[in-house]
Image (cartoon, rainbow, N blue to C red):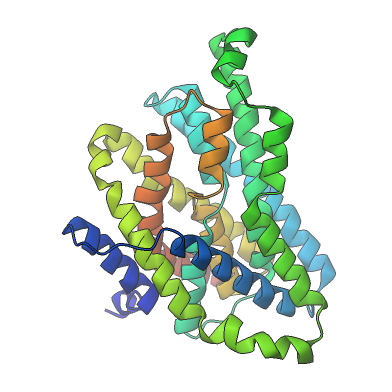
Length: 334
């Protein structure tokens, strides 16, 4: 009963409300640009809050966290690719595009985990905020490399590949990966939070802290509606591929919890956050990059998996589970 009650936080319940509203075909709709505005606010608030804390943090630990963020961003998509290709449920190019999503991160899942920990009075280190900013780009790069390797492996002629990817230039895609708007905003807000004097940053306290949960509830209400749109596509995906959308987060969470609890020596809260990062799948930054870079892949597969299966699973079931996993690993290691 206690585990169920942990799910009864406003953010999760508003996600369920949005999901239900779309399932019952309510006329509830969001203004077109509101979800984007909420995303900008939430990323900025997380970045500023993290930057303030990181301004007092240990530089060596921060560098260590960045190193492991890059390692996770490189390892997880390769692991996902191997699993998908071995399952024989998708071709290699679809596997490469899907894998990039599972090596990247979901800011929405991270925000929900933050709300979960704070509602349960669980303290956490702020270093995972840096990892959130870092992990998006390496997965896109690995996705590009896996797609290129897959084309060569499948014997696609270079001219055909160029035709299929007309309008795509690798340097442009790599630039977008590292200068993606969410990455720039999050990293920039962290720098601002770290360098501005605490007395001057206090003026932002009501904006960054007091309204954060309300904005998150609105954001997740809209995300619930979007996730419900993907329900009808489950049948076309097949059970095995849908199962990947649940099992891959569990494997990623285990790897992330080991990194957070053992390699980084975080407490239960910080370890939970690293597990959440490793378990999440991107549904904002990576889809447009893969659509442009791997036009042979089917967008409905990777968007449905990341937004329709993995995101709801993590928000409703995964986060409390990863918290328990973090408790077990940190308890055993200490």
